[in-house]
Image (cartoon, rainbow, N blue to C red):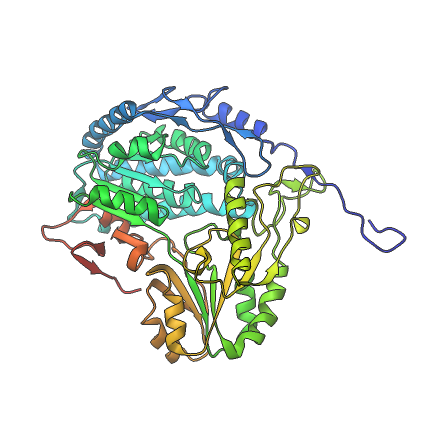
Length: 523
C-alpha cells in the first residue's frame, strides 16, 4: 500500500493461524499423549514414559513466551535409566538386522507423517525459520533411510558395542544430527541413550522419540543438568560409547572423564571455520555464498564467521560483501502479512536465547571499543516482527574488521550472525590467520588457481577444505571429523558412523583423533 507521498506504509504482521505454541503443543498431546501431558513433558526410560523429574521453566527465543521445559532428573533416577538401557542393549543385540531395519523404517514413516509438527516445534524451541526447520527434519529422515538401504556391508564382520551409546548434543540440530545418530546407532544393534539439550529442542526430541519407540526401538530420553548427569551419562562403566556434539569447554570436561577409560567416544567440538580470499576474481560466486553463510544466524558447527582476505583485494571484497550482508533477512519465523500467506523465507530468526544475544552484543561492543572497525552493523528495525513482540533474543548482522587480539572474536567462534574480517599480505599470514583456533571442522578458499588453492589447503588445520565452495557435515556416505582441538575420538559419516558404534576385528584402528594416534581418511 502506497501513500500519496510515495512512501510504503508498514503492514502489520500477524502470527500464522494454527501455528501458535498452544496450538502446536495441543497437537503433540493429541499425537503422543503418552509423552506429552497437559501440564508437562515426560522422560522415557526402561521401556516406558515417566513423570519423574522436575520440569524446568522454559521460554521460546522467538518471542519470549512460555514453552514446555525439560523435566530434570537427579543422579539416582538417571542411574536407573542407564541400567535399564543396559538390559535393553542385551535384548536388542539379539534382534536380527532385517527386523531392526524394518522397525527403523516404520519409525521413519511415522516421522515423515508428522514432519510439519516436528518442524514447528523446532521453530518455537530454537528459532529456526521454516525452511531450515523442515530441512533439519528431512535430512534426518532421508539420511537414516540411506543407512537402512546401505548398512548391510557396513556391518560385515562387526558386532554391537558392549553397552549402550550415550549421546549428549547441543540444541541447534536436534533432528539431523542427534536423532539421526540415535536411529543409526540403534540400526547398528545398540540401545541408545540421549540427554535432551537444556537450551532448546526437548519437545521436538520427545515427539520424535515417542514415534520411534512405538516401533520397538530401544531409545532412552532423559533431561537434567550436565553436572548432575555427567557421572552416569559419561562416566558409567556400563556404557559402550559416549557421543558428544558441542563446545570445547564441555567437550574437554567430557574428555577428562574418559581419559582413564578405553571407552569408545566421539567428541565433536567447535573451531573457528575460516574462508580465505586469495588471488581471486570470482566475485559473483563469493557474493552468493556470503549471503547463504548467514543461514540460521551462523548457529551451526560448520558456519563461516571469519574471512581472511588478501589486502590488495579488500576493496573488491567489500564491493560484494556489503551488498550481500544488506540482503540478509531475519525476524519472527511465523509472522505473515495475511492468514493465507506462506511462512516467510528468512535467513535466520532469534539466537537461542536473550542471554546469548546480549552476551554476543556486548562482545561486539567491546571489540569495537578495543580497536575493531565496524564495517557493517544492522539494526533491529530491519527485522520482520509482530507488533509489540519481545525481540531480546534477536541480533542483526554485524561485520568487524581486524578484531583485536584481546577480543574473543579474534580466536573463537561467535555462534551468532557476526563476521570478522582479517587482512593479510602473504601466504604465510593467510595460513596463520586461518589456523587461529588450533583446528577446525571446515574451511574454504576463494582462489582462481586450483593448484595454488590445493597447495594452501594442505596446510589448513580443517577436516574438510572447499575450493570456491563451502563445506559442511555432509550426508549419507560423506565422512566428517575435525582436526586439532575441534575433534576427539572416532570420526563419523557414512560407514565411519557405523564403525564408530560397533566392534570390528581385533586390533582395528578407527579413523579419528585419539590420545595415542590420529588417523585421517581421504577428504
